[in-house]
Image 1 (spheres, rainbow, N blue to C red):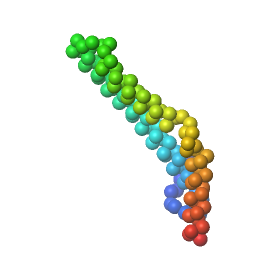
Image 2: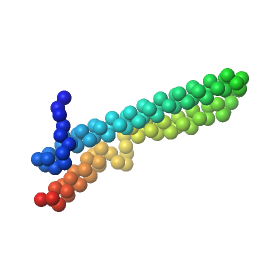
Image 3: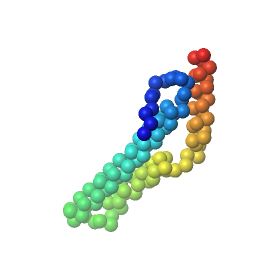
Image 4: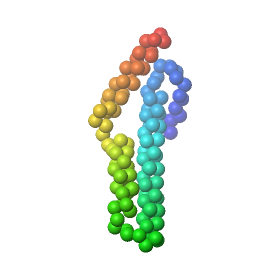
Length: 109
């Protein structure tokens, strides 16, 4: 694996720094989604176990309401992490990054 140096403005070569920053951000987003999914499963298993152990009505809306509504939120989280972003696409993000980096270069010349 190539060693990345993260000193800003070193040799005016931003590509390695950008690649590392994007990869780190992506890994953080994916990790956040997996933790969210993990807790979704754990909490919903706990709720269903508590209802069953207390001889409650398993097929009551309250039993599954947390799973349903939290599942909707989890679905949106999955779309945000793995789906295509229609408003702020990768090309838009890269274009803005390039724009700000060029502006920064001109300012520090």
